[in-house]
Length: 422
Image (tube, rainbow, N blue to C red; front, side, top):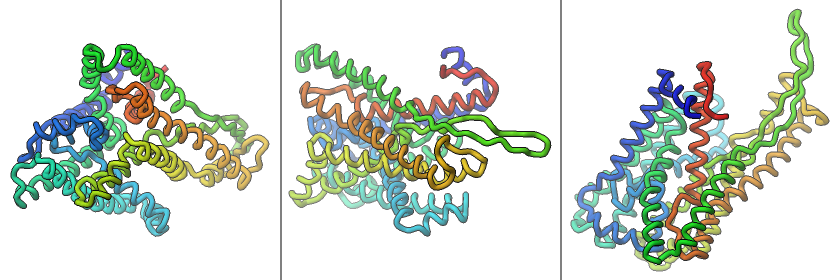
């Protein structure tokens, strides 16, 4: 593996992409430590240190920027929420889907602009909500309208800059930029969480046995996540022989790989974005009943965890349906003279692939949900779970790392170098 990694340095284009990605992540971490002017960061961090805070879970995915109320405190979640809304609107309004098909790249850019406009609107609402929240908590000493507007504008600007960084990371860097930004936020918190776990074990607040049990569960979960996310169902495809000019081509047997967790970490990120927005709105509401609803939707509560599990399953099915169309796959197989042994081409092949996809998606969705919600039950059992590289964060870290490694591997092999994934 180590000799293969040296190919990143040996290939000039890949080296530039790698260094560009690292540079963007460094800027993201820098912006996560620059506090918004006018905010009492010390008081805010003391509030976030309290157990059961509804924003503690969200703070994990922005690398602690929310607890510091930094420039990138909102993260890229407004953009993700806007993307979810437009994905749902394409199902409800076929005209939006036709824009993609008829206008091609121009249509995608047009939908992208609409998504950015909605992202700004959602970021403004979320920024106002969080600013009102910290004002009510006493972390905004000067709450004059001008200062209030400055804080909101800074938060919205930080979110849009982060969204732009994610898009250019995808275009000029390695991997998916938005996923890598969330990945960077989670990994940045890991050393501090390891330190807290060791400290609690030393003072007796968390027994050494439970701390070791947590670590063992995390290591076992990593192995399980890698195994399931890489598992595929290979559907055999047989291509008939045909004559092209004076040559006979075809006749070979190949397979169509269908992954168990074909949606990857996207359902997890979608579910977090959906849960984040109502909690933010509820926290700055003056109505106690709405605040109680927001607290109930916290992932640390039974209702919030159950809703989180359901959302993961729903978004897994939704994203799989969007990314894998059995009709198109069946038509492409038939177009090139292929067929599934024992299955007639056309409609029967579509139904066969649909049955396989539904079963695999069910297994993958339940797996994602259990891995995401499992550490919550583990924390209730042990009484303390300071290692946040578990569950949701574990899925994101492992999933993004694997996808990024695959892109690097494909780029290396394309340049006729030996890869590093054996």
